[in-house]
Length: 176
Image 1: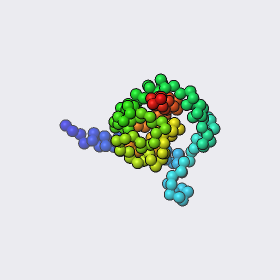
Image 2 (image 1 turned 30 degrees about the vertical axis):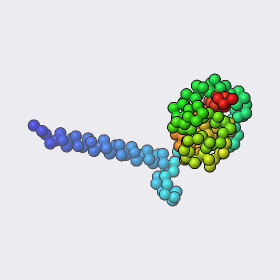
Image 3 (image 1 turned 90 degrees about the vertical axis):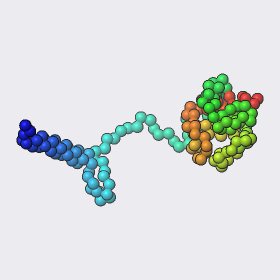
Image 4 (image 1 turned 180 degrees about the vertical axis):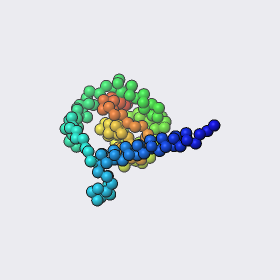
């Protein structure tokens, strides 16, 4: 049959293991933090901080690394832009006047921001820029939502500067 002594031993082993675990947590808390409100500000502070050296000095704000936009545009390849265009074609068309989920992109370089006939813009782009210059397109394509908060475009952006200028060169080559 069932022995009550076995039940008592099992419960005692469980309680003992729980006690050892709680003592370990308490000891680790004392070792790695100074405790709650030790400094009188109601926060827990690190008692043991590991200093690490930075490998490279932090880049200064506003300093662009790599070639300038003009240099990148001069080296842009419209043929490579056709490969990047494949990501855009799900929502846009390059035929003049053929809007899809997004406005048509025929003649986009140098065109007014809200000049695609028959497309209902959100209004977020008009607040940021008036004309799609190559520089404005580059900034927008890097991160559309950050460039124009509230835009309907859900594309996350093109992170590689070469992809952006190649796409701009391709779109610019469409309307001669």
